[in-house]
Image (tube, rainbow, N blue to C red):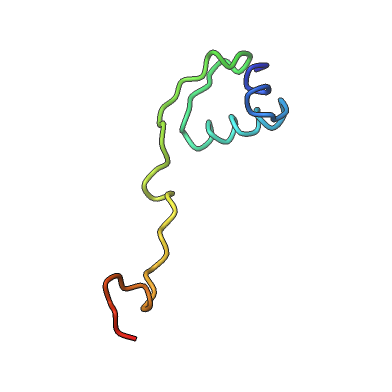
Length: 68
């Protein structure tokens, strides 16, 4: 835990809250919560449905169009 607090600059409470969130979203399993060495990563990346969508192209963003 000390290494996480040093490397992230966050407090223990913030790290524990983030780990709880990852466990509840099934990104990790953490059966023995007395030690973070017991964490098992289930998914290492965001799920497809949770990824941000790129903004739709504007009518003015047409590469190669030289009409003014």
